[in-house]
Image (cartoon, rainbow, N blue to C red; front, side):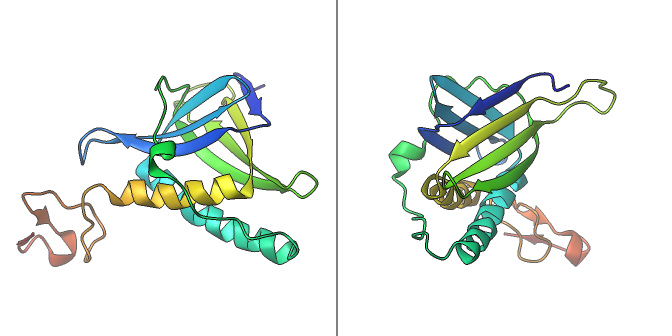
Length: 176
């Protein structure tokens, strides 16, 4: 049995954001609905993977249900910022996506990351949102992820302002 389960059927606001200086940012996924604020800690790659996965998922939904209007990627940056309180429930282990054609809603199923030696079942959060909310979230998430340190074109690792020790170049020189 999971530690706890939370399900929000009507999401008013869903976003990702990062707080902190480049290289030390903490990423969050936040949903607000039904009088609850759910804030979860994520890794940058999870935010990026979610964005890519959402786009692929929405293409699949559109191919199965061609009569649906296309979901808009439009968002207003001021509305996408994380809302206080930033009091995370848990760190994300994984995120799954599902679709209800009857309601025309997408569900994000999020599992808690537990220590390896834990004997508990991870907590689960289920967030139901519109396809429009999800596509806007995907586009905003890519924007947030890109605001960090630049990525080395050789090895794909983040580069520091003072240079980068590139493993693909056998550390032969520092790239700026």
